[in-house]
Length: 285
Image 1 (spheres, rainbow, N blue to C red):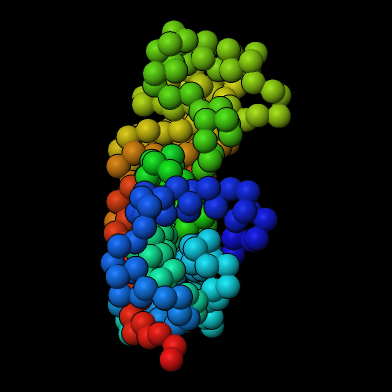
Image 2: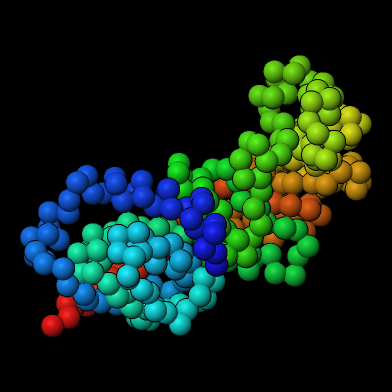
């Protein structure tokens, strides 16, 4: 659950900006059919199977438009839902329900889609020791919601942003001049409490990264045979992360090669939405 404090300090601004994108100065359609203030309600209906995620965000959209609104539901984020389930009921000013519907559903559908595909990927790793990670390949201005949805789906967040940790990729290595030099410079610059991760593409780079003292070695776009050799070469002297061309079908075989982590951008950049609708709106007499 996204708690109240987190919602106010880090989420409300995102929601308000999205509402402003959808409502320049008025909702012409809502005002046309509802010229007076009137209370009402609408049902939140699930239209396909999946993992629900984003219920607090859904609720908060309507609260920003109508502080008296309320959302009642017996479900919580992470619950499995089925097509036809009535997930809850939103109560409030009818104009607020009409105006907030699309924004609230956009967040809920996107977050539920990510949680659903993440759960599918996590299930593929059942019984394996490798940890599934997301990436920074998120939709602009959706990162807090998408990262949260990954956690609800059962995976683990990689670094949240560029301030979160040291990850030296191919272009960082190019800028520094070599794997060794990039690690040396990171150790000189970064606080000692920061782990240093570096991306490698060949076994020669893996060997260099180990000798330079990297904490985590990313094995990027390697085939299974190369990943296996890299893990043997590292021999526990650094943690390992496999990345690149990670598909659901390949997950388990990668995990069985002995890597510690598997990062997958598809959890966020390729997740389809989960279909959820607001139906049966009625205004009180």
